[in-house]
Image (cartoon, rainbow, N blue to C red):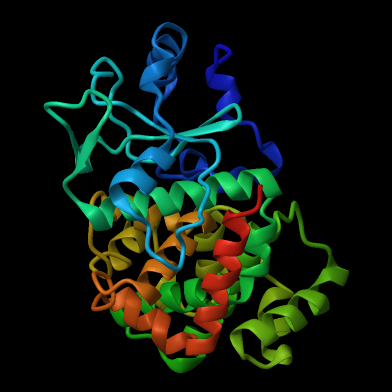
Length: 327
């Protein structure tokens, strides 16, 4: 395997938001030492870079419905790589993606290359999330674009509900926040670089089908909003164009605080904050919230179920896994 460099992490400049480390909460991570450590082991002891398929097929079992998931290009950090600092999010390097399952596994005392699973739901979440991120990097976000209606509708309602419940917003303001959040996530998923005046009607028509709001109401909002692709942009539009002084003091920290307590698991606060800018993470949350009993009692799972019909969620998961199994 060739030597990798820190620059190779950013292999998909056109689709930046597929990488957790390009989101606002993740951009300050210094990954250079981790990449250097991975590089040392790849060069000097490549046998340690065990394909994730070994975990999935031999020890873990992903389930009958998804047993054919190939997980091409995924590798995990072996426990004996003690000099590689732990990292919490899938790391895309060159044409491979690395995850660090050490918090959820332990080395087998008798078989050197075997790992024992200590936390099945968390490891499963990590594997599916890494697979979505890897597949999305390969297909330029095509699969996520197919999933856009569910992703956008659910994200926008989550953001609007989180703010409304804390600020006690009226229905008019809540709807404007809902529309602003929906347009924001559409821009992220479609990878838009800007918004022209003649785009407003086509965007409104598209959003109307997704979020079930009248086109005229959407146009009234998005004709004045600025193009947004980061949480900072989103907050600016909410403060400036929600037409409510209640939201003048809305900050990034307050939004991150409002969205917490609706999901559970390892590193949940950061994962939820990143999901606002990273559709691959949110797609993982919707998948688990709609299919896995361990997560179904969370507030976010209930919101997912309330804002999407059962057949819509089934279709979402079919399309999602169809995208993951493409070579």
